[in-house]
Every structure is written in C-alpha cells, then in structure tokens.
View 1 (cartoon, one colour):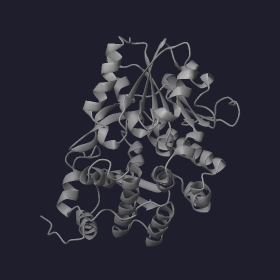
View 2 (cartoon, helix red, strand yellow):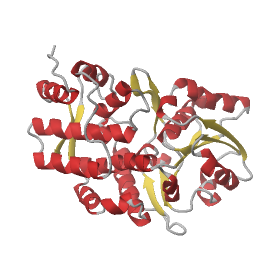
View 3 (cartoon, rainbow, N blue to C red):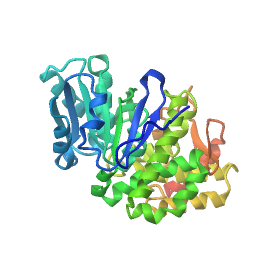
View 4 (cartoon, rainbow, N blue to C red):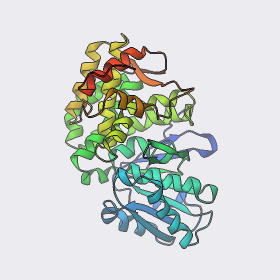
Length: 377
C-alpha cells in the first residue's frame, strides 16, 4: 500500500503513513510542530528520553523540544556538526551518555537535527541493548525528504560512506517546516537535490511540478515546500513499504549516490554536502544513460538545468582520476558478486538498477570528467 493518509492533523499539518504492518509509523509535516507535546507523547513508551542533537541545531530548538517533553526523564547529548564527525568515535558519545545515565531498554532516543544526527541516533538506537525506540525530528530539508524516512541508519568509514549501519525504523517522523527558515541557502539546495531525485526515478509529474515551482521553492514559500516534502515522502514511503531492506526496487533511491559517495569520500567528508555530491552524481548517471543510448540527450539537459537552477553543482570535481573513481565506487553497497550495479535512467521518471551496462561507457565518462585521459587497465 505504501503511504496512506491518516486522521486529520491539527492546524496545517499533513500526515502520511509508512506502511510496514505492525511497525508502521507516521510522518507528520507542517509548521509549529517541534514544541508541541501532542506530536511526541503517543510515540514514547517509557519515561526516559535522550535527545541527540548537534552544536548548530541545539541552540535553536533544544529548549522547545525539552519543554515539550516535560514530565519525562530527559537527557541530552550534543555532537559536533558535520559529516566528518559521522564516525564510530563520535557515536560512542551517545553510548557513553546512555550508559552513564543507566538508561534502560524502554528509553527513546530523539534525533533533533539533520541527516548526520538522524543516522547516528538511529544507529545508536539500533545497537543499544540490541534495539530501542527512536523518533526522528529532522531540521534540514534533506533529512525531511530522505534520510529520516525508511530506517537506514549508520556511520561512515574512511574507506566508504554508510558502510557500517543497520535498518532500524523510527516510531515517528516529525518534520517541522518552520525549521527550514533557519537553514542556510546551501543546505536548502542540498535538500532539493534529493527532492529532484524522486521525480527522476519514479514521478515524472513531480519533476514537471518542480520545474514550474522552482522559484517558489527557492523563495521558501511555505506551501510549495510542504507540497514538495509531502510528495517526496509519499514516494519514499511507497518504495520502503514495498522493499524495506533494499532487496530490489529500494535501490532506485540511490540514483546518483554511487558517484556522489565517491565524491564525498574522495574529496574528504564535509568538503561537498551530501546533496551537492548527489546532484553531480545524478547528472553523471544521466550522462552515462545517454552514452548507453537509454536516455534522450534532451532529458539530460533538463536534469542539468533543473539542478543548476536550484544552485547545485552539476559537474563533479576534476581532482579524481579514472582509477580513483573506480576504486571508490567499488566500495558500494550495491556491489554484488564483485559486479558494480548502478541506478540508470530510461527516461524522466523511469529508473532501473543494473549491472548490465557497457563498462567501456563508464570508463569513457570517468575519463571525461576526470580532466585527464587515463588509459584503462
């Protein structure tokens, strides 16, 4: 079934359901949610709560969240902000806090922040005492439309992004659109890259809508942003409900990510924002699809134009050689039996995961983007 509308929410909030049977959970989208106890209390089963945030988001929203949690035994851990801290060493700070406070199996972790905070808090929840509850309160557009939904949690390793992690679904996702008012322009654009992804992989009508409403989204029009978030979450919820653990079609959500993760690892985590790397990676996937004869060159141009119109990079860095690209891409969760699988496009709104592509076409693309001809070995 995928995403289903739930009962009408107070005010302007929109509700969707990630349909996973007994483990189904709501996504609530709207303004003025973050300080309202009504959105937290139904999803907290014990008395102990650990709020995990970072040193950028906590000064903005932590007081409001803790006020909404009045009556609970509430603790906090504040992590440094940045992709470069999404590692096992920083993760231990969460475990240290849980153990020092002697929190039990009925504790609920609450992730207040962007994708890094959500991934780390979720992974800690998956591991602590073999699994405890957590709630996602995403404060960036990228987290609201992508990383907070679907239960993927984890940390990075110097040899590969998100290679250490677990599937662990949240109890609820509470996406307060007012938090986007404090989001830097660069972070907003990074989130829009993941929004565009849904149009490219499965929703051509949404891609058309984004082209029409680009200026409204950049101007942070509340109605346009809420619509974009809801349509993105609906697309993701439907995919996750059909393939929770990425045995098949969920891998489509990784369009551009194999190239993008290579950019992030190759350039050093944090140098490129995740959404920026994914934007360049999606253009690379589109261009490879065109080289294979799968995608019309006009659709490649549309993809580049929309992403560039959102202020995103559409060309990868030239610092990586073809050999380095291939080395980085080999450390990818979609590699099976030693074969690299990529998400490629048959058209706007039509993607597929495949290892059945001409490797010479991939090498030709990587040679072209590297800025230097490298003889294939």
